[in-house]
Length: 268
Ligand SMILES: [Zn+2]
Image (cartoon, rainbow, N blue to C red; front, top):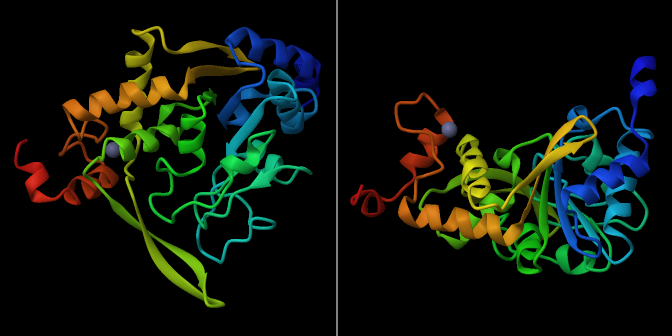
């Protein structure tokens, strides 16, 4: 750890890397991150958050996923995130940061457009057009992947929703109905999501993805509209383009494939 401290980048240096990558001051920025990949950063995850907010400036809005396991009634003021990383977990707990109320697919946001991004949304789909990542898309925001891939990008599910991807998997989620904790199932376009990594090549060949270093992490930055339009065009050509091939041994994609109505499979 002592060695880590010695080579830790300061907040200003991280901010400069974000600006060089193309993070737009005053813009909306949806960030998916693995702090393990970014570190060491002076101040830890809070230093990274400060750098992100610094790069956006006071006119910018920072957004992160704060999804939960759905195993208990969700309280946006207290339910910890599940698998979202320490940066997102600390972000939603900061003063002045809003958190949306979807019982499984919540997001946190800070900045002038935070209330609009965190407004109530339908239960399904969790990441559709009318959801925090859908609103980032609608508002012309950017998507930043810090040490993670498009396989972790919720914007890809926005594209699946717009393209009406024919697969749907139901996940149980506890919600409160008339004051009683009740388990409901929420349909979503879920699968292993490894196929989303194909976006790297498709965006790069169109000059729509900027890549570089942020701290120790490989960073990818794109316009949400570019991500969605490229993904939707590939889904139009092949609605199952993001699923692993049948026989590839991917249980999650096999479940998604089995959910496709026969009439949608007929042409294939
Ligand atoms: Zn798969």
